Length: 244
Image 1: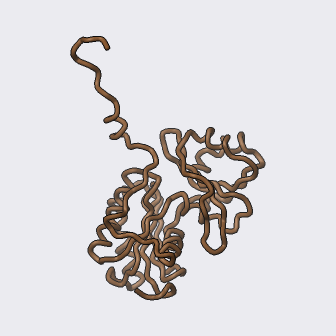
Image 2: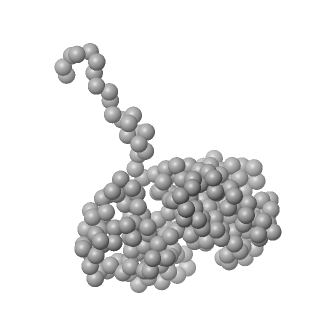
Image 3: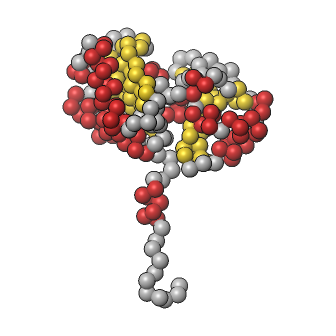
């Protein structure tokens, strides 16, 4: 394994409709692809990886470290991204770093003087959220637990000034303006997309700290149960005709 300056990293995010792949050498970006188009990650993810490797003149065997966003986010997208990286890690025998989508998007607001609220669309009229503080040496550090709730409920729990970032900010801007008003600090629209280069930087810090995993250990992080799990928890009505 090379030192931190020379380590070659592949980072992948498939947690939302936007798919992002990055190749980095240490802290420096070599190549990045971000597609915000309505085709499935199963159709585009491997193509993005192949394209970037070719443009960088890297081979799969050149990679030293793999990183993947494990959630929360789209259940299908997360499964595709995690399965892709697990497969590569097993073939290449390389370590993996799982990265939170909430921490990764908080990377888009470096040096924020106020708490950062990562605010991601969870669909079903809900949002994923978590608070972070920015630390110059290690980036965003969580100061609260991740949660998934209706967006108005999440916003009402915020106190003082807060910087909001994530695709949920654009979707629920009307609620943010109504509930937080001048207490909300909101960056330009291009700041709200999660980027794989940020995932790579976080993975490098984890690698430096010795926080890596084997392929078998990496699992998606959903926060809320899937539709299938919810359906299993609903017991079918009795067919015996006996009242309970």
